[in-house]
Amino acid sequence: MENTKQPIEGVTTGILKLSGAELYYETKGEGPVLLMIPGANGDHFIFTPIREILSNTFTVVTYDRRGFSGSKLTGEQDYSHRIDTDANDAASLIKHLTSEPAYVFASSSGALVSLQLMCLHSDLIKALIPHEPTALKYLPDGEKWKVAVQEIYDIYTKEGQGPAKEKFVNELIPNTKDGEFMKAGNGPETPNTTYWFKYEVRQYPSTDFDTNKLEENKDKILFCVGRDSVNTMPAWPVTNLAKQFGTEVLSVPGGHLGYALHPAEFAQDFIAGLEKRGKI
Image 1 (cartoon, rainbow, N blue to C red):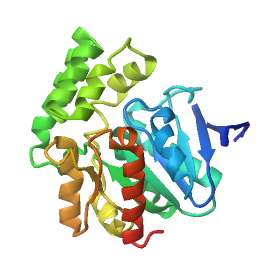
Image 2: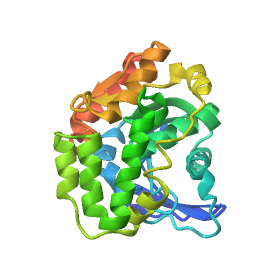
Image 3: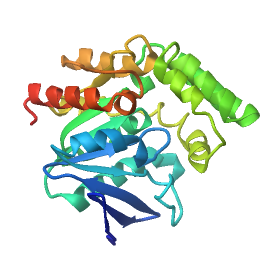
Image 4: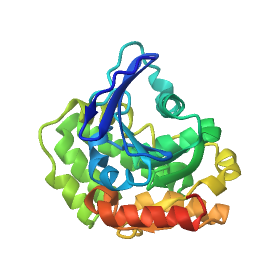
């Protein structure tokens, strides 16, 4: 493993060399490590505003997931077990940066990765805050949603990212400001978009998570849902899991992109939720 770091406005950057990839990561702040796992775009930049606030409490670690932006692929990939690889990458980052269990926040596709991280590496986690993972296993009509996700992918292959994103928003997060923000940000297709549609949009939500392992570690998990998301599909899997486990759901500002669109308010409720659970 090689670590190349340089200070940029209080931010330390690094490259972690792993089998088949080089992970680009950044750290800022002092205190216990908080790893933030990005969602569909796979890029650390989405966390920049909230990192500025949370770095007053934590050593915040943000990174590009394998194959996205600055985290280059350097060898063969096992795409049949890609979510495991993503979870193992997150575990490698934690072990690289601290000898203590870490806090982990993740949203959407990243939250799916974080659930698998808990299943595979629970010993590395002090507290996990998964924000709106679209885990179809925990929906009573999961097969219906698998069909909907496949339709989104099919539209992408035939018509491109614009119509596919519109279908995604209309199916998963309709009538929300976050959804309209996602539609408005529709520019030229990027390699990140292509990678997500090809390897993730269908595969990750269909993961067969080890529910027993999650329940064994329920005291470490603070399921997280935006107040504007409660009537949309991304809120339901963790709401159902929390009910099954007999735990509370942390309610935070905004919707599916609340941490990006309302960083100050989100960070305040995030820390308050951890304090209430006795995690900080």
